[in-house]
Image (cartoon, rainbow, N blue to C red; front, side, top):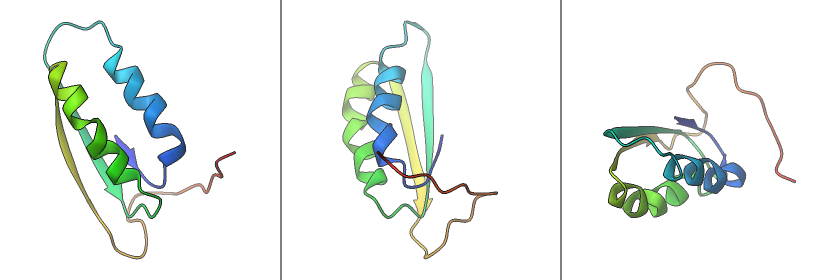
Length: 78
């Protein structure tokens, strides 16, 4: 799951993953693409809850001045 300044949506997104009724093993790979809004801390805060439900997590990324991902669209939280 690519993440760039997504703090407004992360709780809803991660809750949706937690609510899945899939019973097999699942891994969530998160790449934080230079977020400056605390997105990575939010993802880290969900790790224990998700792992208790069998969702392993891999979190990586970078904190340089610019995102490195493909085309970025700026959005604003309301």
